[in-house]
Length: 272
Image (cartoon, rainbow, N blue to C red):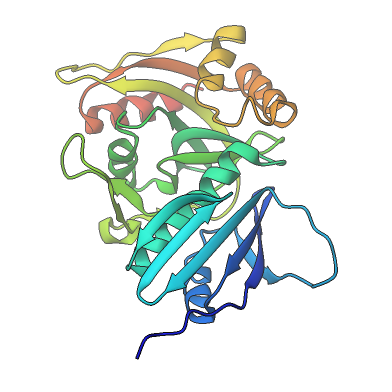
């Protein structure tokens, strides 16, 4: 018997990290499933009918038989039969929304770890080796904030934004999300002050990591290059970046193997 496609639209409000989204679904079971996959920091509430609300995004989940779809602002973001994959794409959409449109935080495209109550930020674009470096820190006892995006508040504290580690099996391949507990990692639980920022890249064969210190406008430029929402929310993000540039040790450089870089950063942390 052919399954009847539900026509009822179920709605939820998704809020977290200074953004909100309206989530619509046509299947209660699928809706409950994706709500269980919400990233840390996001919460779901029912939308009261008859009360107008404004949202930063409209997300639509549609089920037709075994086929599933996710649309964002009318654009198709996922189509397939895997509910797990649907949940991952929804999480991606919400995290991207937060990093670009937050009214509270400046998100830096960075890895982040806690060492003795202070945070080391490791900004870098995709394929820069952030996850590899963060993993090496976790194996040395550091606590995990994030391997991709770190929210920073107006008090210049970095917040945990804990997704599973994105580890690539080979260069150029898509990352596989791996829980930090599988490598013995522990997540940070509270916002913490930022002690050091190293904006660098991996280069095979480099034995000694380099540290070029930046201050003022040069430090600000390094941070701005890793702030995906700067053009959308400059009134929120610019003051935070200015504060970081003035009050935090900001470096750029080149590194080789992750273990040598961890040693170098830990030694540098003792001097700042």
